[in-house]
Image 1 (cartoon, rainbow, N blue to C red):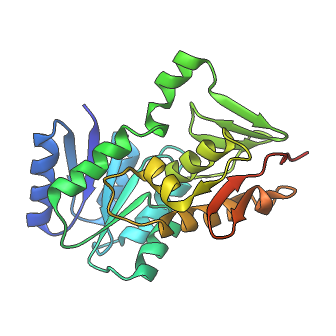
Image 2 (image 1 turned 90 degrees about the horizontal axis):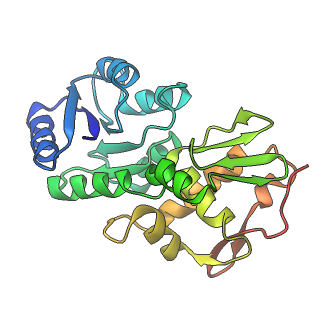
Length: 239
């Protein structure tokens, strides 16, 4: 039974989300403020976190940032909730490490559908797939993309990619040289029933480039194909 942490200070929304999660067969744990939410994330090891932005004691963006900095919590998927629907706010949430962004008012069924899609995504099936295929790692020069641990390592140093950043990099790196449209990548990583748009792909590609920019040619690892989308450079390799 997946354990979902919901951090939301509006009790009616909190209970609505909890009810729909439990009806779907998930276990819901809840917090009304950012500090308690952070403590539960560290102690309860949730499979996913639903995190409101405007919460007391520590806002959702700060909580998200601290979760991404924590050894135990850095890979937990985060769905951010916010009444702010402007693109800049959504981009900021994604830059802080959120994997998805849902604006209020929202449909509880849509939220649960997004959570289910994220929990059943390629990255969260990594352990099973690794055992089935025996191909849990992809080594490219000094960089190791570890599907089982959902991490990218350079000389045994974790590069701190979020789950969606990892899934996007893994998808392209295992298909080097192949060009993918933004829409195709969005559908493969976030799902066909996701109501976001392909700009989410642009944000995540930019964040991957920033995190791997210190590698030789790291910013050119994922190439932009003008008018189409992106591809992982076929002959790329750090030394």
